[in-house]
Amino acid sequence: MQLHTMAGKVVDHIELTPRERECLQWAAVGKSEWEISQILGISEHTSEKHLLNAKSKLGAANRVQAVAEAIRRGYIS
Image (cartoon, rainbow, N blue to C red; front, side, top):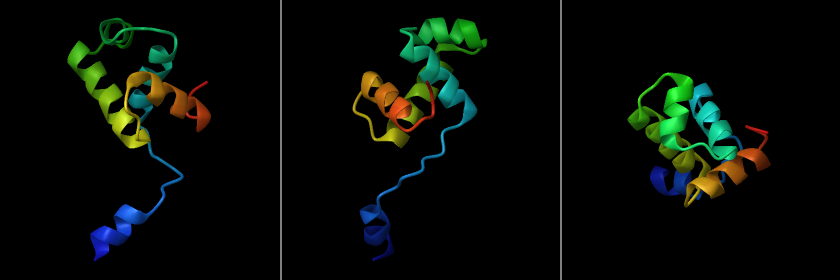
């Protein structure tokens, strides 16, 4: 019962980590996972994971939708 109730909730505020926000910000200007990894000094796999986590948290189907939702919610500009 508790899971059903939690699943039915609409979440207005989503906690994105600073790294997820950074990766989304770079994705918003067209950088690839590899380019983001080079800019931030992390592995390509890690930059991809940050973007996947952000996409999941934002309920986005793809990277473009995740960036648009992050902009809409004011997480990035």
